[in-house]
Length: 236
Image (cartoon, rainbow, N blue to C red; front, side, top):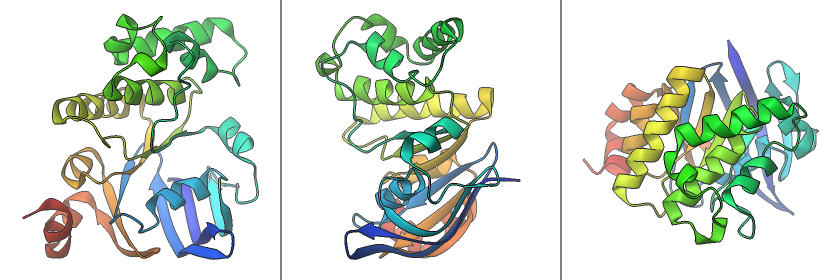
């Protein structure tokens, strides 16, 4: 069963159209990677799903049409978004960033438990709990951005280039946490990622975007074996 269904999606900025009729589905409990060159429209796809750009077509989350809904309404339904560039609240501490991610939740006991779960997932954050987000390393900021999104208890998590600017060791640590989320909580993931190799190891399915159009979709293993994908994104 699909948790997210995108049909005929067109989106852009002002008069400029970036996406030209995207059709995409993400299975509940599954993970899908979106691959493509810089400027292909990957980030716009995630922004369109969360209501951040002008869009038309149909976007359905768990059977509910969210195409015309505001970003906060979409978040309340259970869609979390970790944007490119992390978007941490630099003046706030790690603890306060996590609490900011739980603003839509009312049960204080559950919020406290959510903080504990995030610190278990990313132990580094526990060591820096009182530090300002600005004082964190790039990898720690990425962990905080993911943890803050998780504090909203999403059913679907959108991630935009989570490995961007990270050392290979830190990237492996972040993706190990994402794999743990998949296996332990059944969280559904839609992942935009330049590091195709590590992305395809995490997900079930993948899609390739070129110039605002989907040019290839299928199981991750088949996409990884496609000669064009291997040359363009895997370097083999």
